Image 1 (spheres, rainbow over the protein chains, first blue to last red):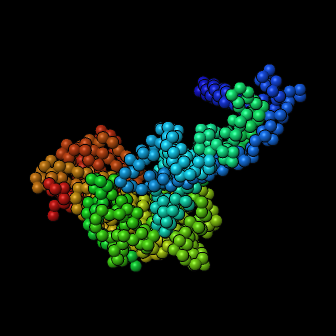
Image 2 (image 1 turned 180 degrees about the vertical axis):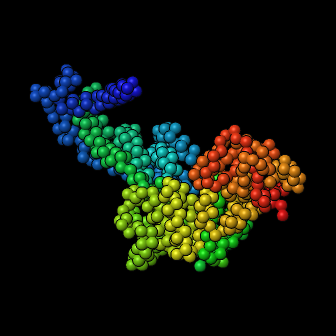
Image 3 (image 1 turned 120 degrees about the vertical axis):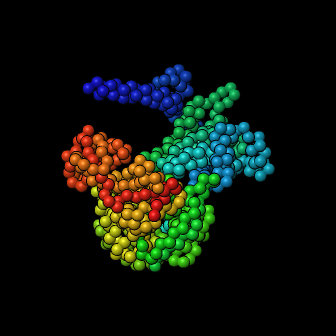
Length: 279
Length: 333
């Protein structure tokens, strides 16, 4: 009896802690969205109030959608994020497979070298990256951003995926070899489907910093045609006057695509098809 | 068709030598079992035959052709794994047919062979299912079916029954024995379970620490073990080992007597001792005796016997059942 009561108390405590954390995490998002639907005075006078019929206003969204080329910005953000994730997942998974599957000289050193990328922020190399991009004539192109983000995402992807790939049964890969599958077929058809939940995790971890990044778009691709959403919304933030309606509306809009991508990936997280493969 | 020759196979990981010169000849149609304690190199040897591992030196020949540098799929072998290793995203039918499909066989032929193998293993009702929807025994049958479909020269089994429960293990063992009789194929089977080895094999290869200790038929190994290791490994409960000097035999370092080759009596006999523990198994009674001359010995009696701890008993080895081993642990002639 005491055990059951103890566990109720314990699960209750866990739930309270989790709910508190959820509220803390969601509060800024809630504030952003709520205030994006209010007029300027209401934002400052009562920032915590939800919009009432008197204070409700779509002025922010009108500004964002009217002024500035937000469709292009969204498109740029989308292209950069999706292509970078695809490249990170493809190359990360391939490198992870090689590191976990094959025994070769320098395997451990290579793994450590790639892991260093997790510890050293890529921004430290900004000057060199900019010089490189200038030399390669890639400044103000989306390619420049995609290249940088792919490099930024790879170390963590390789680190996580190689751990997961070690857990894929050797017998399964060997069965594939005996049935005459090539190493590529084993990788794409046997191993990748089994590490799909890990791929989704990596995709989420890779996606968010890329979508939110301001640094590299500002430095490498500040031209009107290559602006991303985060950079685009900066036009509403001035040194002296900030158009809060527009900023909040832009930010609210920017949440949506990430949310959609997250929902897509988290489906993959839940779906596991490993069951029945071995044992 | 399916003979195999191994000549001085060595395999080392860095400075650690796993296989230390294996020579073996397997004739067409033989059922050969590699048996040994874990870490003895039996699985590595099987993988070397399959081509999943490269030998550091030595030669592997299948049907007289050197296959050292031939890819696993081209060696004419099929392998059944301990963990089944079925492709989770394919149906039973596709699992069984994948090897042929990769080899470019026409669809009608694949269907025919898959159906035939499914018939042999009574898997027809499950052909459209995925591995996740099958029980452990069914999965292992699919894995065996996948091997049969390839019509290999050599069947390789890597501890195929280890993941099954006891009842299923006996059934699947019978099924494998039946398959061997009907296919007349050469089979090489790795196990650490001596019961599987004794019941299935034409020829047992006992491995220890990367070396072959003895090769022979199950009864050869039981009746004429070549050394102390094989004597101790084959037979359950384990053979009793007694120092030669204790029994007044100066010529032999160790004397071995199987527990079932001892008689027990309350009145008289060679070695007097006290019962320390009794195990009643119904068909057998296993009595542990602490004797004055021979130390602690195990006696296996057939049927039920009413011995209890602290009983005073006399144990007598049967005539001609002693195995004498010399200083090098090898049997004395």
